[in-house]
Image (cartoon, rainbow, N blue to C red; front, side, top):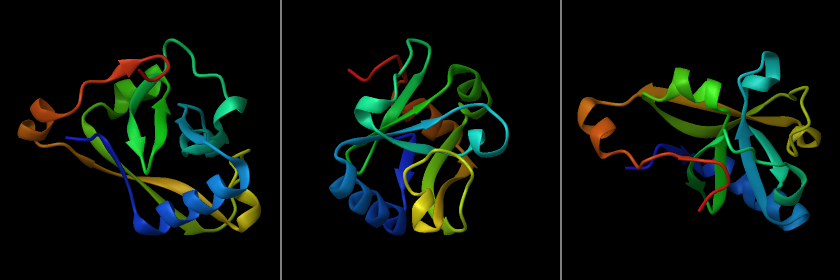
Length: 124
């Protein structure tokens, strides 16, 4: 079972951004404000650290989370969505007048047992 998914609207936006900027990645840190939103970056412009957690790919795009943030969210399923309104971060969608956000729900015990294992550092 995947730990992260994406809505059709967010996938459409992600495709538009990828056509414009090339391969992308998501990273969600444990910071405040927009730091707790998923940030979308060109893959070569964000350095994934050894303590970052790779949760899987959404629409072919790797999704990472800081280790500290993962400790809070490890029992949840995450869905990347998009809403109207500009965030204040450096995420690629900001000039589009929209922002990515995370919708979450708790994993059931069965889902937690079946969930894909997490990997620390750059994806395998």
